[in-house]
Length: 269
Image 1 (cartoon, rainbow, N blue to C red):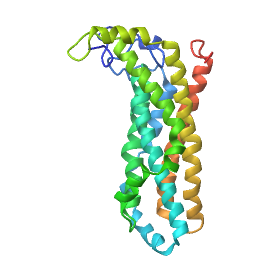
Image 2: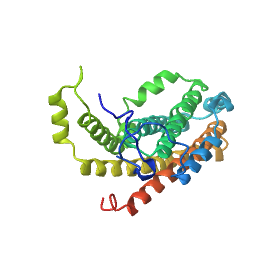
Image 3: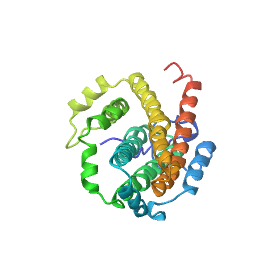
Image 4: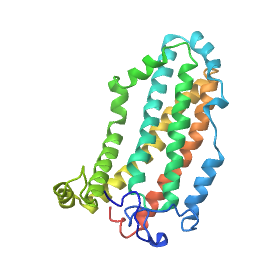
């Protein structure tokens, strides 16, 4: 076992960095050490909404009346949005939460992941289920469509690299157990390089920023263009709410990148 999930030693969170600190124990949200992050988290939660607030089935009439070319564009765009959202939720949960040692920032990541997985992803599913199409077949096509997968390849590579560094870090701090041998721990200690890990974290932050600021937004523009032409208006209204959330996520990534640029321990990266 390791102290990854709960470090039994006292931690002075006011002196703990955002990432790769002494570890975690109690969620010290009583501390006002990151008021800016706490406010952004509260603001995001204050905008809470659910896909059930909308009736995507109304767009079914547009699907029937639109020609094949427009429906193909609509579906391809929706598939890409679905892939990006799945990626965003997983990246936050598996890439950043394990290495975040500041309690306020950890709280941000949890709400960020909740919005992506439980609201945005559900919304995309509800949009598809409201149309006269085979939603399962459309979701299945995402994972066999090389054009869609290719657009996310470089972003995924950054996230996967950090996940692997996280795993080695956790293993290097473990103690022998039924599933973890002393040899495995020693190998992890020899291979773990905190400087390389930090570079990977910065790359993943930039990748998340690109995901939120470029890939999502360029896709949203297509959804809004449909509404401007009197088509798929409910879908566009849902996307508008999602875009509002993603703007907050983008703002946080910018804030974190700027913070690290001013931190002597990270600025050189």
